[in-house]
Image 1 (cartoon, rainbow, N blue to C red):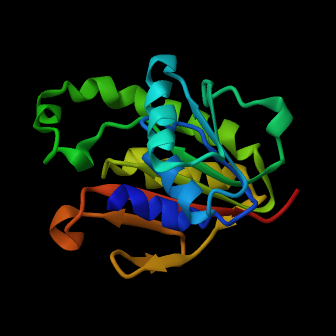
Image 2 (cartoon, helix red, strand yellow):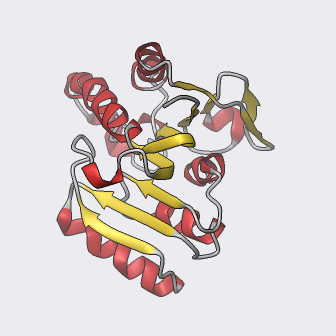
Length: 204
């Protein structure tokens, strides 16, 4: 449920072009395509070519035809798509602490390994922002609750990019905030731990 709330924040509509830059295994791409009535383009990119079959097979089972699946490092955007995408979703690699109830082995990970993640997350957000057309939306999400991977990444991005601004949003499950950032917590929202930030491109 928590992961699908970022699809709600994305607000994909029929006929639009949507990019899901870290798509595998594909549930968010599927959610966007369903919101669009399977009309438009959903570009499902992922770094791991071996996992792309999950997206293709899932789209086939759901009868979705608007997905275009390709292997791409989200830190290296497709030049042909710059400034041409209505909605961009960055569900970035993270420490996963919000889904520890489902993946208890996470508690045994060496957290020093996650120190490099904010740099990767920032690079993905920076590169993917170039896709967003003026007036379009950019959603950043993680399945962790660590501020350094969530609010800190988004605030640093906004400080460097005055052409983007927070896009306030709300949902009955999580409420909402004017700064566009929502953190879901298992005891409070009865969901996995999850972070969602919604941004709008307001300038060229």
